[in-house]
Image (tube, rainbow, N blue to C red; front, top):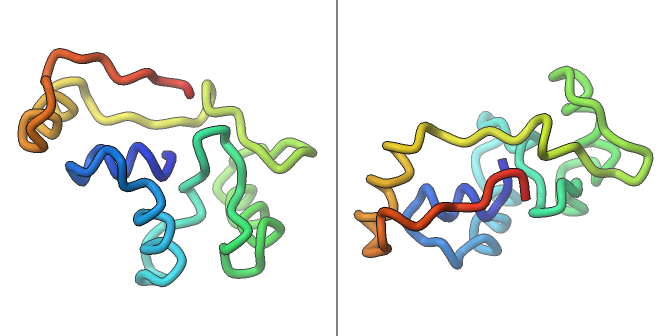
Length: 103
């Protein structure tokens, strides 16, 4: 997932930076290694830097490209559409607007 996706699911679609700060200082038992930026890029602030995140992702079976990105078209996960609609409604956003996937 991307930081932006987590922000959307939390009902705060413009709070991707806040999600990044939570990932940086949040509980280490959550799978933060699976969170990347909107381009699939690894995080500098990850424990061990981008290299540390690369190692963790590769342990999960994710291929990390030489440029330090992952293929979002292949690995990005989204919850079911019904969940997205419910989250958007609870955030006061139009439920029918499609969220672009794979970006």
